[in-house]
Amino acid sequence: MTSNQQRVVVIGGGLAGLRVAARLTADAGAGAGGADVTVLAEEPHAPYNRVLLAEVLAGRYAPEVTALPDAGPALRRGVRAVRVDRADRTVHCDDGSTERYDTLVLATGSNAVLPPLRGLFAPDGRELPDGVHAFRTMDDCLALSAAVGVRSGVRAVVIGGGLLGVSAARALAERGAPVVLAQQGERLMERQLDADASALLHDHLSSLGIEIHTQCRVRGVTTAPSADASGGRRVVGVEFADGYRLDADVVVLACGVRPRTGLALAAGLRVGTGILVDDRLRTSDPHIHAVGDCAEHAGRVYGLAGPALEQADALAAQLIRGPGAADPAGTSGATAPGYTGTRALTRLTLTSAAVAGTAPGGAGPFDLAAFGETTPLPGDDVVRLADATRRTYRKVVVRGDRLVGGVLLGELSSVGALARSWEEAETLTDLFHLLTDDGGS
Image (tube, rainbow, N blue to C red; front, side, top):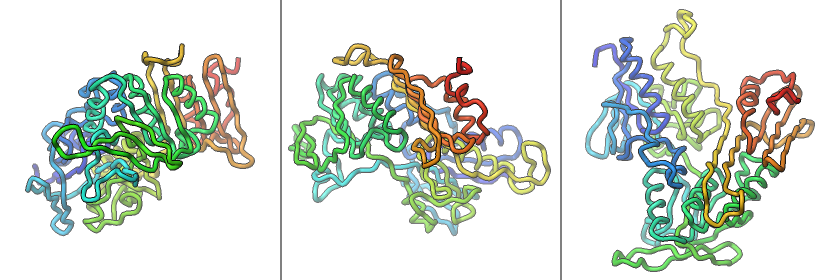
């Protein structure tokens, strides 16, 4: 390390953490001084793209296909940061090693939410029963894949009808498992989809043989002693709030995620739902930044890949340029622009697959995208185009002369143009052209 290099330690080997490291390392490689970067990744696996875990579970991708670009010697795998000493600017790790930093980047991500279900944990322990799985990490994915692969007809119950739950249910159905999807809310993916779009998604999943229950709260899991000599427990069913019991060999907890803030909280940083950051992605300690699923900016935690990458790019640009550096246009004395938030688009592709026992034509591909405000306010204009034959649905919400949100299912050729109009708050001149891609002909 040269004397003009700053020491940057990144805690977290996911999309956001590796993106920051890659940008800083590339800058150093270009001979611009740059930074000496170390990434502490808790998982022993090569870093991977979590977005593709459902593809691994479905058997379409091998785990190695999900690998992120090689981070090289900057990456320390299987090392967990356990304490941050802010006074000494040192990170202490679980293997006894320490890393000194000038700048620390927290990209600790999020944990799966484990709901307070009766019987989920033994009175004296915190181990999940055999057969109960979260769906957040590669280890979760591989364990779940092994559980449904032991024999045919493994009965699976997925708890949670959001993005993760829908993806997991579809993947398990593709593996031939009888699947029940239990959603406490009124409809599937209720945070992203309106009632009509959610109904189409419901029909699609049902056509694959997935049994769906909405407005259905799971109260607990039932267990029995494990078949081996471990003395543990295995899941044998779930119990609903109305008292109905359903047999299950596998239970998937897809009840959302929660930002990992424990390390920041123990270090005395300001924490809300996530680690609080300003427009420079700085925490309450100016030497520590946070990006990705763990960061809360302007009251919002995104939990999506797009915003995580945008935050990582914004932070890397600031660390590279620093005060008084030139901006991309070459203007002397300008610092990198701050992060002002991301207009996030949710996209889900349920790939075509042959699923046993499905209705004719029911196993085709299913694409959806949602952005902005999909529920109109009084005075908003709503435009819908639906084609029952092609099983497509497009809806946009217009406020004044601006596009404020939309949902598209089945045919996404227009999503790029619509998303750009929404992101850039363009004045609408020909909405029908944006919706149809054919000038309305």
